[in-house]
Length: 165
Image 1: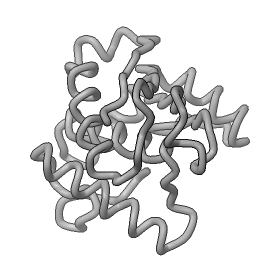
Image 2: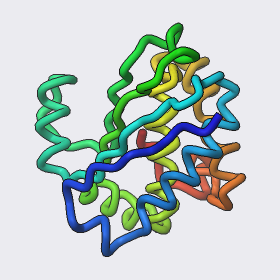
Image 3: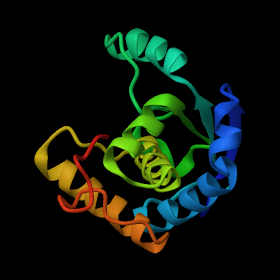
Image 4: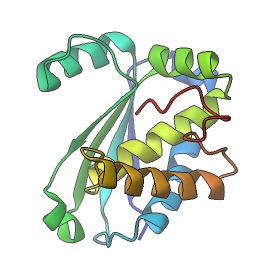
């Protein structure tokens, strides 16, 4: 089941940089398929195409970190409730941080964006990287998602400066 994706465009920089909506919808469809997680018919999520200022404020409020980050996920339900949930939650992306990281790592902005959309979505549906085993599992799924989209493995040392999310 592919969830419906809604968008909030808080930063106009996204419009000129990448076809954010179509890339996100395609990425979410592949991520939903690769995750193995059953989703309710009509499930939906919202992607916020935001900026560093807004993400910094959210990060300070919800994580106690007064700095921007590339992606934040706000799940609407506990993992045990995903299969029945109509609303999965929100993924918020910071344009400036995402663009800077892509440039520093020498990767296309669209590829880094796809990675962070997949990463954020996986958090909404119960995946995490709080310990080594969970991190390896999540990274393996992300790698499969990105491979299906033609994006290089962001966790390979020769293809990425570091694994940011």
